[in-house]
Length: 461
Image 1 (cartoon, one colour):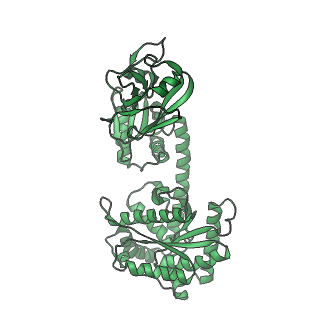
Image 2 (cartoon, rainbow, N blue to C red):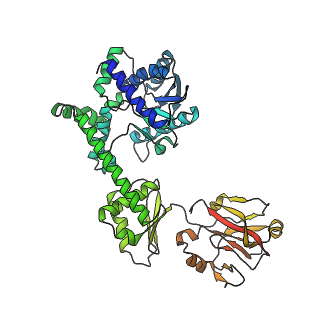
Image 3 (tube, rainbow, N blue to C red):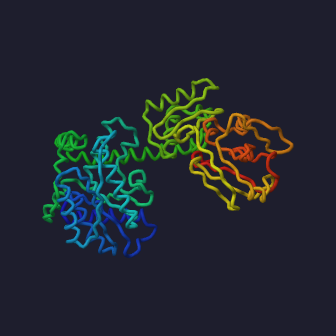
C-alpha cells in the first residue's frame, strides 16, 4: 500500500472511530492519545496521526509505558520523547514494576501497560486512546484464541473501537484501532519510504512466548500456503462477532424472562434448552462483570444447582463471586469473609440522614416514617452497633409477636449467607432497638417517626 493510500485508510478509519466516540464532531482542541512504544507499528501510527490531528484541530498526546524489563528501556524512553518533540506532540510516560507471579510475565506486562495507559488518560482527560494494532495482530489474536479452545466471544477478535474498563481501570476512555485493515508488511513499507526511526525489542523474537511463536513460525508458513489469510481470518472474526451479538441478545431476553442480575429462577432456567442454559448463565456472569467460567466449571455448577437436595445449603465458589441456591433461586453474591467477630461500634445520632460503618460494610439511614423511634430519644441516647447474637429477638409492632431474628429472616426471605453480615443496634444495656433487614423493635425505645434502614455495600439490593 503506497504511503498516500495508507494515509487515506487511516483517515477513513479515524473518521469512523471519532463518530463512535463523539456524538457530534469533537470540539477544537479535544485531546486524543496514542499508545506509543517506539516500535515500528506505533511509530508509523505516530507519523500518520501527528499531521492528521493538526488538520482536525485535535490535540495529540503520546503515552509511553516503561516496563523496566529490558536493559534498553531507558534508551527507548529517550527515543520516544525525542520523536514526539520533533513532531510537537505532547509526551508522557509511566514506569511500572512487574513480577509476573501467578500469571506469567507476558500477561502481567499487558495488564500493567493498560493500567498505566488508563491512568494517563484520566490525568490528561483523554476520551480516546489509539493503538497501532493491525491486520496481522487481529489474525494472531483470533488464531491464539482458537488454539486455546475458546468460545465464540474469543474468536470475535478486536473491535475497531470499544471501551476496556477492566484493562484501563476506568470506563470512560474508548480504545480505537485505526490500522486494523492494514497489514504489517504495509506498515514496514511506509516506515521504509518515510525513513522512520523506531526501536527493535529483541524479546518480540523470543518464541517461548505463545504470540511470538505464532508470529515467527506459524504465520509465515500460513502466508506461504494461504496468501492473504489474514484478511480471511479477520472476516471470520467479523462473523464470530455477529454471532456473539446474537448470543448476547438471546442471553438478555432469557435473563429478563428468568430473573435479573442478582438472581435467577431455577425452574424457569430448567425449561430452556441446554445451549440456552449455558448461554444465559454466561450472560449473567458477563452482566455482573465477572470473569467468564470454563465450560467444565459451568457444567459442574449446573449439576450441583439442579441435582443437590432441596434443603442443601449450596455454595459454588467462583474466582470473583459465590453462587448460592435458596428457595428455588440461584444467587450471585460477592466473595467475602464470614461475619466473624467484628468489633462493636458505639455511636450517637447527630440528626443527620446517614451514618457510615465501614467495618460492617454499610450505612445506617434515618428516615421519616409512620412507625419508628422518637427523634429526641435518638438524639439523647447512645447506641451500639454489633453483630447479631444467638438470643436476639425483635418485636416489630405492639400487635405483632416477638420472634427470633432467624424466624424474621426466614419470613422475609433473607438468604442465609447475607444474615451474618446484617448488624443490630442496641442500647449499651443490651436491649435491641433495630435489626438490619427487619426493622425497629417496638419495646425498648419510645415510638416516633424516625425509621432506621440499613443499606449494605456488600449485598446491594
